[in-house]
Length: 391
Ligand SMILES: *Cc1c(COP(=O)(O)O)cnc(C)c1O
Image (cartoon, rainbow, N blue to C red; front, side):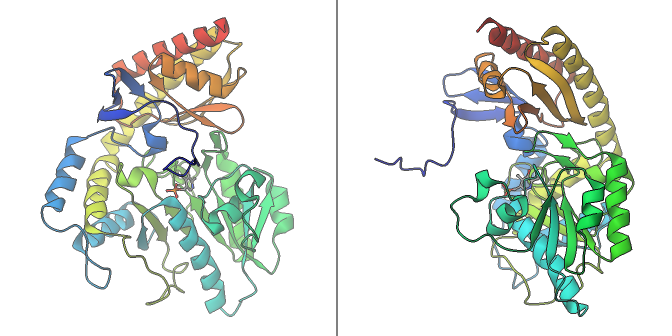
């Protein structure tokens, strides 16, 4: 008989009942050091007092009101995002994949309103992940995600990762936009070199097409800048955000320039829950922490410390690990052993990591992780690697 929960996940036999900062407590009382953060979601760790306060005080007043009315918490969060980024305007969603839907619609509508309805094709890259909606899986295009699900949403061109010449060759009169993760997450923590992002920006400008960045995983302070593209000194036209922005509350957003958003007039898009008071109250609290320069400076300092310790770990376990990669506190350990075995050995050593493609394990700690917890995390990873070697 089928499980009462649709069996689409391969779950580890772990049941967490409480979270505190970088720690997850299992039903049996074991304390796990969390280097997954719910896949880059719990940006401020578990049960951060500011987020608990934001959520509970909002919950006592108003949970939901339709977007038929003004929502001050939504306005406040949009104002913060506009003040801190390239964006002139923001639409709120509940997830990353919904942000992808709007980003695609917005790019096509932009060209449509300019009398170029033929510009619908979105260029994307191998190894990318943009969510599980019909547009999200068509955008990523991998057989694993698309097979058996009927006709794919047309209008996506898939190119090899980081091949600027292929992008230039693929652009034609039907091209609407280029969509890319500045640091691929599911694809195995693959940062796009700054120069390649600059080249993509220049190509988009030269051809009058839009640059859409998917910062669902790499955004919101994860790489040590508020958004990862800031390292390359470029700005997108449209950007997808989710995961960390809600700190654990389901919240996503599409940020855009006024020009890129010009087609999205009243009635062209909407969401029942997107931008609800609870989510936006929490999002405001997340932004108040993460956008502060002192906070980002600490992320960078801790990222340096963690990376240095991980380099040591890789050097002591050359049969298990090949290299450290990534940006800020979005780190990957490329494995020589099977990555799933390393993740599993981590569970036994009470440290949580997340597998990714390309035989990588992801380390996405809370941005608030302490130096002591970084030290402890690497000790536990060392124990896990030793167990993998012994097996
Ligand atoms: C997680 C993720 C998504 C999808 O977000 P959901 O909230 O799961 O829909 C899209 N893009 C990237 C880069 C992601 O990491």
